[in-house]
Image 1 (spheres, rainbow, N blue to C red):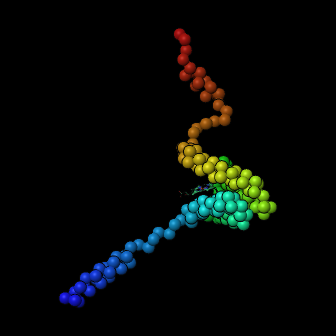
Image 2: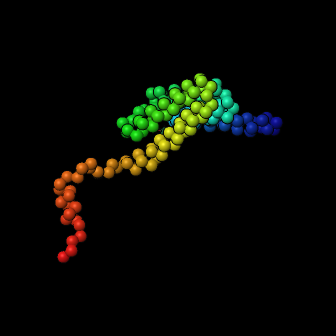
Image 3: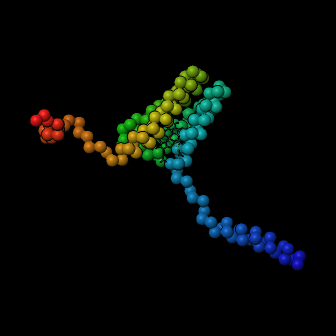
Amino acid sequence: MRYLAWFVPLSLVALGVLAASDKPPARKKAPVDVLMRSKLASSQKVVEGLVAKDFGLIEKGAEELLKVCDAEDWRSSDEQVYTHFKTELRRQAEKLDSYSDAQNLEGTTFAYLNLISTCVDCHSHCRDVLRIAAEPPKLKPVPSSSDVINADEKRPMRR
Ligand code: HEC
């Protein structure tokens, strides 16, 4: 009876181990995902550095952001506005880096504000413009003469 008292919990543990080993290994996160999330962690370092006037921490965050900007996994895109924001992020991170080197609190704060507005602008662009533009509108820079004639035909006429 005493053996049975041990047997039940032990077999439950064994079952648990078996079940755990049956589980598929935790899915590796895509590097892009990790890269994107690290932008947030690095910006938080910068805020912490700003409020504590800790230039070392600001510099650390800025350098991490520069690494993210240069990472191969963060693919560049042909889309011009997206590319502009990506370049702008790098430029602001560089400013943050050099202002923290110069121990300039106002400068780092200003660069940080611009940097964050670049984050928000690029995300808004990706969310609201690129998604909508999945089906590109059929716009022509200059309407052809046939378009003008067609437009005339559609205009309501007084009879
Ligand atoms: C050039 C455009 C661009 C800029 C600038 C940018 N991001 Fe992103 N960000 C993206 C894109 C695109 C994704 C989604 C990537 C994917 O999932 O493939 C993303 C994803 C993220 C995510 C992950 C969101 C999630 O759902 O897990 C975080 C967090 C993030 N960005 C933070 C930031 C921060 C903080 C900054 C500024 C320091 C910033 N981003 C600047 C384009 C940008």
